[in-house]
Image 1 (tube, rainbow, N blue to C red):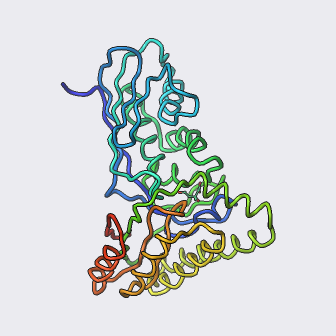
Image 2: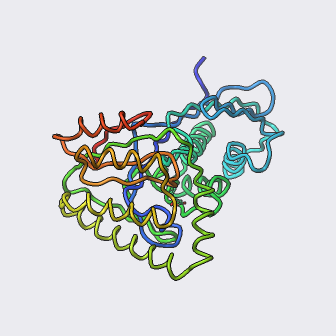
Image 3: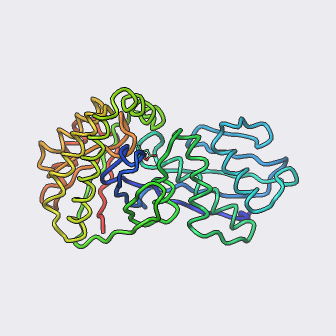
Length: 311
Ligand code: MEV
């Protein structure tokens, strides 16, 4: 049977500036279309059920805990669409190839797919800003104090120069470049990493503010380099960003092993992406070294790789 509605959303990669972006420094992020979350709506038998086998979750809206992000995004979106959940019988199925707890925006991708599918089902048109705002509310359940970068990049599906609470700016890539994204296979909770950074910041604000300023300066230089086609500058900037991410204690042994392997095989720079501790890293590669870097990442334990051109 044809579903009543079905919609997808992509993942994302933060090229520069994660964590400092929570403290109002800029960050650069791009959509990652090789991974997708899809929400499909079919007629249900009783109430609203949400099944997400890839996330190991299955919830009934009327019995879900207020802390359930899946239930929260359905409730919020239905309220926005002025539909009463009690009167509805819907079966919502989520399939996602965005690995969870891996820095690629799984939570925001799943929420965005649900908002889009419910809007389609209700025959309503929601603009990107509305989708992003709804998803942001649920990001708070995922991340505690999110900057809003994940929901913005994913809802707009655009490369953004993002500053918290400021209008989004898109950035242009003058000369396309290629990155390999390597998955450590180790779950990294963004919520825990963000909360640990806050504890560090509370204990030594001057030091953390200085580190965040340095990350912000790297982001500005990276934006100029990307917009002017000075790709040779990006590798060292990635390494500098990674050094600061180590200072704020969001790297981890598996990430460091993959980063060292990529650099050893010739990558011009490498860093973790997203919340860190585990999850994914990226390495800047060329046509000449992409095969060697990919092989080195596999040898060092990467459980999956995505090679993508940023353009
Ligand atoms: C998570 O993808 C990025 C972080 O900077 C958190 C956030 O911005 O909300 C770690």
